[in-house]
Image (cartoon, rainbow, N blue to C red; front, side, top):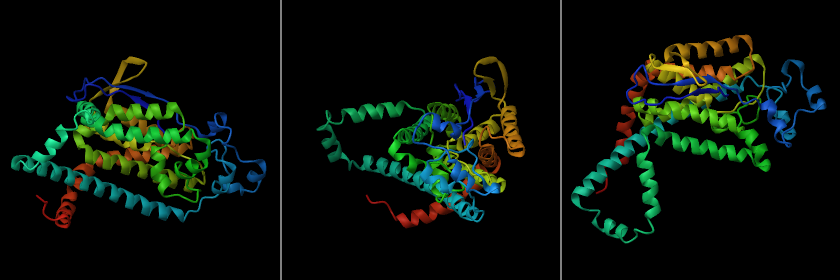
Length: 360
């Protein structure tokens, strides 16, 4: 599930049409190459392949799994789509509810901090903090570094850190059976729900994670500046699961089991949103900066390629996941941010009543 789209969105605050961007296409992480790097990741044996019905045969070019998990990779139960659909709806709803609560609690905390400072109720706390200056020096340094980050970088940093941690877990041979089961999305596996989300944090190769994080860093500033960090995070998390669901639907219809992993489904949503909001922003190919084109034209070409990949059965990328993420980004740009996101105000009222009046 990895579109290798390298873009560089710099000097974004003005969002002018002359904002420099770089654009190129890289490679999808191909699970078939896993065995070239990890000796404990094995192909299906000839005996196992012969036991799989022809119509539901395992495609070794697309997916490599440990032999103990091979029984999960031959048959896709169409009825599991209902479970995947329910999880997608629940996770998307939960994501936006969660970021709404985060937004409310942030505003509430700032209001109470301002009120307490006026009432001078933090006097004793300040005295205690002054007595631990040396101990808290490292905290001040971290706080200073954090304050210098842009709003987009403050959202990007935790996401990147989670992806780096999961990338490190892939390097541990004893954890790979667990990683394949839960951090790689596969409609033929026993566990189909949570891997739809966990796979969006999962990258196997260094180039894979570097490319995805580069793109996310490039466009997170513009997206967060427009959406705010809470709405951006809701869009990003939801888009990842929706992209996984789109991949599941395509693989089930085509009866093509296989592993998918990577953050590019969610990144495609961010990319589609930014390119829709700022269609006149100029992009250029990374190694050919003299050739420029508009962001609006770029997203149309990218989605056209993914649509062709779905219709023609290309196996270069997980085109269905990319297309699902991009379509959700377009939906959010044209409808979600103006019609769906404001509906959170109704939930905020219920949550405020549940929390009760703040304690002084």
